[in-house]
Image 1 (spheres, helix red, strand yellow):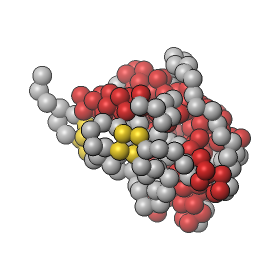
Image 2 (cartoon, rainbow, N blue to C red):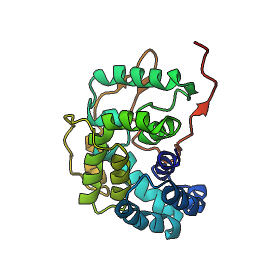
Image 3 (cartoon, rainbow, N blue to C red):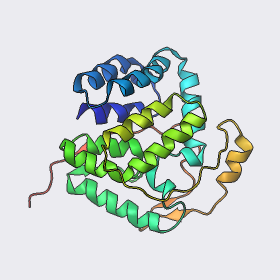
Image 4 (cartoon, rainbow, N blue to C red):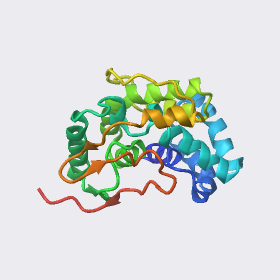
Length: 228
């Protein structure tokens, strides 16, 4: 579905290619009409900013919000499990879900990265996609509220993702917002001073989300599903 894929693209690290694709993204969202007119109108501020702002401003804003700020991380399980080992099993289960639909991705991509999750949902039937997204909708709505408090145009984008989940969103307990401002680098550094967590055999997270200036979201590579 185009809307899931379009929102996934908008949540990725901004590149010149993304900026050039803004008109196509806007057209896809309006054509499919899965989002309400009010939500589409709210997204215009973000689309306009992406299309007109300097690329270095876009990059810096994205990194300060989503890579430097732990409470705004786009890794979904960060907000549910924090640094507990329960997060590792959740990662394994989500990766297995992807693979059961014939998707594969490199070991450097964490399965709970929201743009990757939306990319996966875009290949599913709408009802199934909404059912999976409902499991994360409470997290996404909280992220939207946190971004709203920081007066970020990305708030409307997370609200749009939550709207796609429909009315059956799960209610889960989340890690509290640290309320650290994106430009308060001292406070952000302190928030990241925690031990690494292991996600499955030989795969460890060592704070790689903290300074991902060079990291780009790579779309999952589709491979034919194994025959039953």
